[in-house]
Length: 364
Image (spheres, rainbow, N blue to C red):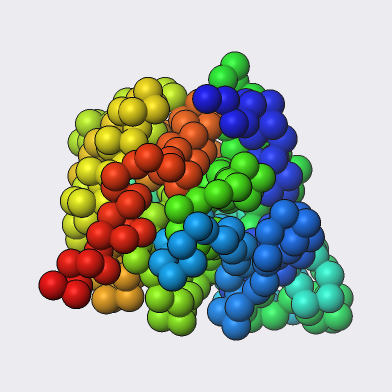
């Protein structure tokens, strides 16, 4: 079942990546998502900044959410010198050495100012503080700075201040195609948002109400998802995410998505995972299984907080997570196919359990 082409996915992800959305300053992507989704489903933005599209189900007494966070990592301004040199600190799991020296954007309140992320000259001796970064010590945000070459008055007029967000410059973010793979900054989690958009296009008759949630501020504590799941009663939550490729995990690159059993916040629901595995098998969709650490999702954080009874996390294998990421477009497409089949499979006994059986067990 082909629901979305690789070319279409690449084009959508490229559009999403080029809309800046550092945690807490997500207006640029919000405007695009609202415009795009409102023509396809009942859509709104809640008080926490989540963009929500509701697909009515055949049983509207029950509901499930699928989330993909729309925010990206970056940095936040700490201080500004009179000469226009800006110091920043991490926002989410960002590292300066991953970005490298080059153009970054400072998202001022009135204007975006571009500057150069700098680490200092290489042709130096032990007398220069950056010498230790060449051979001995890891580069930290405290060792880096941004040269804007703008007087402080110009930065102030643009609304650049302590708290302003920094992200990779747009011309450095444009995705690159490697045959059936896509390479880009912020595939975490713009590629997952592309899955939500494909589901908004293709879901017609889900068994229960489906909430497609482009969640806010996930990289700084799943703030948006926690708010949404506190406000909306759900029977289950499935988070869409990257799945890190590393020697310590049994995850292979390629077109097979990954279903997690555990992450750094706890275990996922075995019953929900079993349902997803069986639907994948029935639909002929390849699936990898993994338990990982150093990772969390909207779903695991919401379940640990007691906001949802069941949670799962479906991801696509990704190299260089939180850096210049690489993933197979087929894994993203298979996520669309699996979730579409899970939500709409009219004869699935597992979805009938969500629709009817669980309320029966409650009565008994």
